Length: 174
Image (cartoon, rainbow, N blue to C red):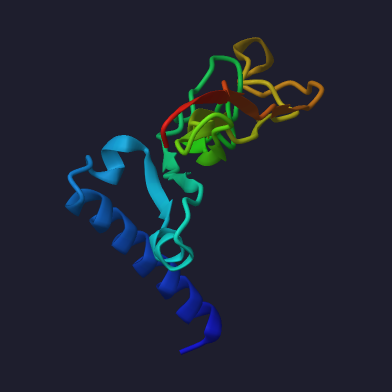
């Protein structure tokens, strides 16, 4: 087995294991969420150092391809309207969360500072291509022969739409 095949297989197994762990932990299935939670376990270090460490975690989005609009035949054109249609793809931006303890100045309790960057929805459209042949449709005034015209070519611009956000907060307790 090639190293690239082994790496791909390991990544797939890791993703399936993370999704199964999220489902087994009482969370909703990853496909329903749109993102797979990725906790960073620091409990062993906390216990060995006998101190509170930051709580760290993340979210990895699951990209979902959509259905492209099929070619539309337009009257007066020999080629369909989008020769190469745009492919919609929905997913998300990765999210992260960090809660770090801060020693309380007046007592033994810990306060915390938290930074949260939730996974944001991301909608994209791939570029597309539209072309038109240098001939017109058959013209009955010219005995059914097509006439010459200027060829046309155009690129359908890609689109990217998202609204990222972040939260910063401080409070008592961890």
